Length: 203
Image (cartoon, rainbow, N blue to C red; front, side):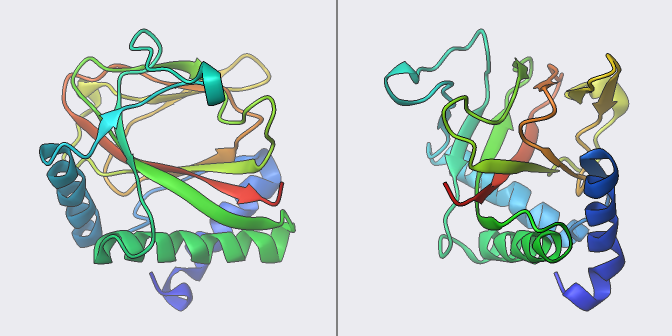
């Protein structure tokens, strides 16, 4: 992602975060990059590299299918060219946010997430009670041709009691303050792919 071509999009995210604490941007990455990321996710799953996601931390960490049912694998720089392109795009976003909002975002951690049909993730916050490093949550969807009737929405809960359902359509990026917005993933009738991550500040 080249910063000169995408400056208006990056600025829109910054403006949204300053105004309301969250942002939805469609077309954050090209269709070609999204297709490659989706293929990478499915290839890793076929190779058995995606594992059932756990909840909690430390001794309390466990797989609880009644809470969440996705399979994940964390991504690291140097694992693959396509993941490095994705991480580079997120780093441009991190720098743009830091320049304007002074959040002190230091790094990013993220993983592939594959939800089989019927899987869900109950309402939760992305920030741990004993660790406030996660400042911003970021999820980009990899589902080409997704239809509204297939479900799988991200449901966001707002402080005024309102909710908003966002469909997981390909190349849609959703960014929000990790400690401010409870959210859940609704069940889908089809396999649902995404890359989910968090911008973190220094501990």
